[in-house]
Image (tube, rainbow, N blue to C red; front, side):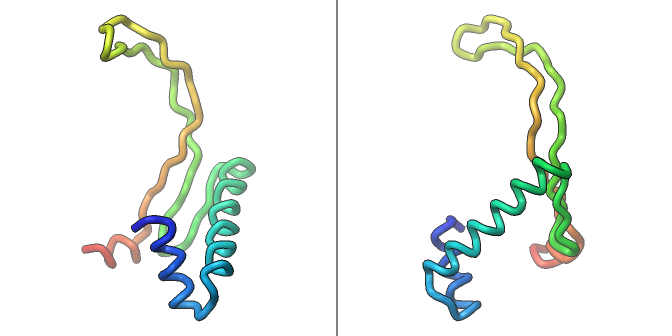
Length: 90
C-alpha cells in the first residue's frame, strides 16, 4: 500500500476529505519522527514499537570495486510488531 492509497483508505474510514486525511497522516508520521528523535521510541500498544538504535561502525566492501571501505556508526529506525498486528496478519 502506498501513501496515497493509505490516505484514500483513511478518508473513507474516517469520513473526511482526502486533504484532511493527508494532513492527519502527515501529523502522525511527524509525531513518530519527533518521538524517535526526542525519546528514542514510540509505542503503539497492540500495533508495535518504533525505536531508534545505534548501528556500530564497521568495515565493508564496495561491491562495484571490491575495495574495502569504512562504514561509520549511525542511528537507524527499527520496528517490532505488537501482538494484535502479528495476529491480524497470520
